[in-house]
Image (tube, one colour):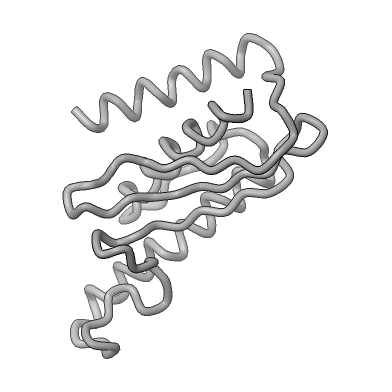
Length: 136
């Protein structure tokens, strides 16, 4: 069900992009994704200048409100399971890539999912859509 919602949102973005240039109001806008199965969510902040994307930041949060950063995947500040930590850090790096790719291209269709970080990808798309709703 969740994937259907994300696919529909993404398809809507593509349709809107094909209908001509969307006019966005200048400003800073924040959008939040829904929660995943663990209660984590993503948050995007986009800056629009002269009607165009000029900055994009993407952060994901754990259920307890902790930012997923270089400590994500550690237990009590230590790497107790290297495979789990490496997978968690893959998602952290993917978050940076998603925001950078979107900023570089200005198009969500050009932001590709990173294998092993598709939940963060879905959260990114959903959060960007929410942020851009406020910029219309």
